[in-house]
Each structure stands twice: as structure tokens, then as C-alpha cells.
Image (cartoon, rainbow, N blue to C red; front, side):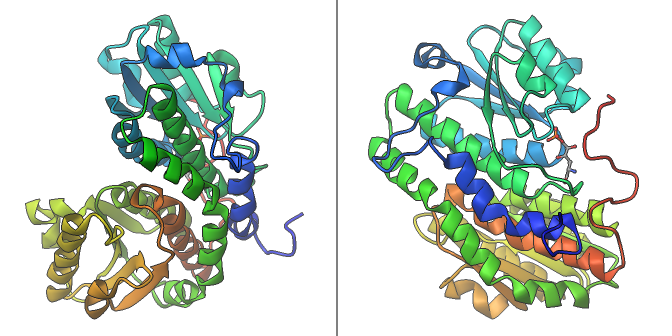
Length: 369
Ligand code: M6R
């Protein structure tokens, strides 16, 4: 049932184009319309929303962080993201105009479930993004959008993360539509671009081989750092989490702009630093800034592993290893930029002889608080 692969994780990584297509299936049609009626939240309810709060754990939390960038930009609704285990212990401000989005692959994470119960007690509307049909969180939520990624056996979330992102984008674009369009044309174009993401994912998988070799060459390292800006920052967090859980290595992610506020002191000769570079198009200031961040760490001896859009020549001179990904709109980039991170962590763990499906000390779904 591993489909010819030694590990479920390897199979689940290559299943990603199909998984993302399944999340979009029937929800994005060729005429550019979105069909999310199954969410059980009516357009009227969605129009009353004044604030969005996303709660989740681990990888699902990273999906939430990315969703915030998209939702605030497209919908102009304030959006907070919080680790579910912290949420109900700090007296959060919720009411009927708050939409809480709970993201959970399993639908059984106790931290997220308790946060959902708390939010409902405060009379917020709760929408779940889940993969496992009929699991507890969607049963207790007001509405649900299933990701339809299919079963994920490997403990590390891979295809379920990409499909959570697709689901978040669907919700963000739908909200923008029902609430009246500040960026009407942009939204319609993005719906079309979202529909092409399965092909882009396929393309990344076709070109990711050099990452395998790179990972094997780094098996003896004790630390890897990850840097990103904008949506690249949560992708960097996700890359670091994958490396911790699979390769048992010290891995840490920073918002690249924070480097100079402390972490740059960590940089020493030969330290691998993975950098996620935003698309150069339309956001040149952001792009210029990350190019200088790459220069800064390299000047201090870091070995730079740069994930950047194909054709982004500005980063080439400062990249010890350049991993190219297809050009997609910046907000959608995490769907493609995450994949090299997954492959990197998986291969590095395999190079160390670890069981990538069952990393030590971890369970697929965490049903204790
Ligand atoms: O099932 P959930 O999405 O609620 O699980 C949340 C986390 O436990 C999960 O994403 C975990 O961080 C992954 N194993 C990371 O790969």
C-alpha cells in the first residue's frame, strides 16, 4: 500500500498534485466561480464577520499563518492566528461577529478541539478545515470545508498541509467575493491561478532531485537555519519543523528582518541557511530586502540554500545552492515553496537512518491536551 515507495511519506509527497486537485475539485469551476455552499455558513453569515481568528497546532498552525496574509489582503478583515493550546487560556475577545477557523488534519487534536469548544461557548461562529471526514472537530463546528487529501499515514504532514493551504485560499477568495470586492479583478485572476496549482506542484516535484543530494551532504550538520519574509516566513517555520520532527536536528526559522535583532550572531562558517525568496514581481522592495539578507549571512560564512522563483537572477550570485520553483503569485507561493523543504527534511532524515513515517516520540494525532 506504499505504492512502491519505501515510506508512506515519500508516496504522500508525490501525491500532492492529485491531493491539491481534489481540494479544488467542484469548488473552482472553469468559469472562475467558487462553490463552497457545503461549508454550511451562508453568504449572509459571512458578510457579518468583523474579525477572523485562526486556531491550529503544528503544521496546521503554519497553514493558518499563511492564510492570514491572504485573507487580510483579499478581504480586509482583521485576522489573528494563534496556537490552539494557548488560545483559551488568555481570555480572547470573541463574539457572534467573530469567525473562528479551526485547522486540523485529523480533526482530533485535543488542543484544537478544546479551543473550538471555547469559541462556541463565546458564541463565535466556527468553521473547520479538516481532512478526516466525520472527525470530532468538524462535528462540533458550525461549518466545515474538507480538504479531501486522502489518508495521510506518515506522521509528518505533507499533502495535508498543501491542501489546507488550498482550502484557506478558497475560503479567502470566497469571503472576498461575498463581501464585495476591493480587488475584484485580482480575485478573479487569482481564482484562475489557484486552479492551475496542481500543475505547478507537479513541476516542482519534477525538478526537486538536487534537493535529495543536498540533503544527504548535510546529514552531519547539527543545526540548519531557515529564513523567510512575508508568506515565506511561515514556510521557513514549516521547513524547520519538518527537520526537527524527522531528522531530530536543531532547526530554527526567523523572519529575515529579525536577523539583525539577534539571530545573526548565530551565523558561523559553513552553517547551512535555507532562504525562501518571495517572487520578485510586484514586490520588489521585499525582494531587495531578502537579497540583502542573503548577502549578510553569506558574508559571515553561511552556506546559503536559496529557494527562489525560476528566472530570479538577483539571488544567483549569493546562492551556494539555488533551488528553483515556478513563478506563481506571491500569496500562493507557499504551495510550491514548501515542497523542497519537505523533500529536504525527508531525505536528510533518511540519510541519518531515521524512520520518516514514525519519528520518535510523536503520534499522528495528538488527542491529549
Ligand atoms: O491533525 P492536526 O492537523 O490537528 O495536527 C496538528 C499537528 O499535530 C501536526 O500538524 C504536526 O505538527 C505534524 N506532525 C507536523 O508534521
